[in-house]
Image 1 (cartoon, rainbow, N blue to C red):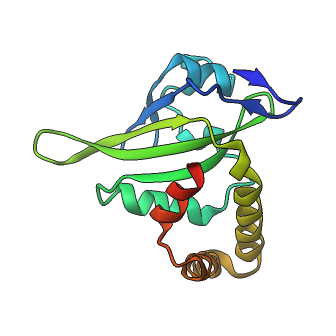
Image 2 (cartoon, helix red, strand yellow):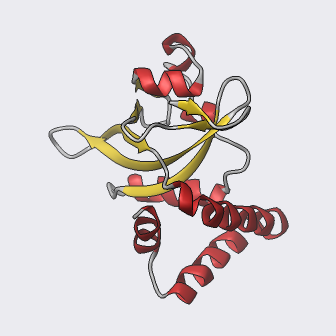
Length: 167
């Protein structure tokens, strides 16, 4: 882990930030690298909503899509900008899945996050800025519509688009 500037924390290429949550999104497990990058102790994170690290630059539509997918036992990959305890931020390429019991019932959620391909960050930042702008004017439906138009113009679905960017 290295600091790029006073506010952005760069995730190392071999770093994996891992967390588990219960059905309501409260953290039940977090690994050392996640705590180190986010700047929180284990006591400060366990039992807290995972959105404790949610950055205000994140469009709500991305989390709506994420929750919709994982509640249907579908995995999702997403680019996420998180905030640190001290006011900094870090970008991650997140894989989120449902955790199930032996009967297939969802008992929580599992997320593994890694370094974002820095070359695509300007693209993601531009898309997220536009989604936030659209959301502020027209709400979640307008943001969903904008995202659908963007994907249709590129001729890909969400998963294909996100995966293609990471490279």
